Image (cartoon, rainbow, N blue to C red; front, side):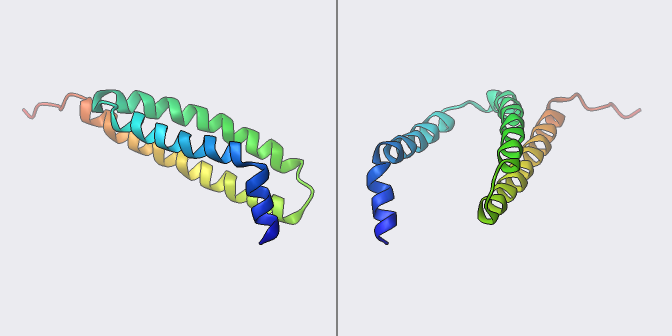
Length: 103
């Protein structure tokens, strides 16, 4: 418990930045119009793909078992996020395609 409190005290500036970033992100995302959602989702998926590559590289340099397990979980969950994002983006783009007329 002391180690956790010491960690929080040592990194309180970073923790405050993360908390403020969460609130700022929620505020920005809540004001995005539906028309812009699909392009922004595609861009976020591309960025997240680069993050996954970085996580794989970092995981390759990990020395402890715990670090490797956490890195593996991060890569798996990040990959699920990217795949799910592409599926949602594809479904949204299907809505904008013109339907074929029946003869």
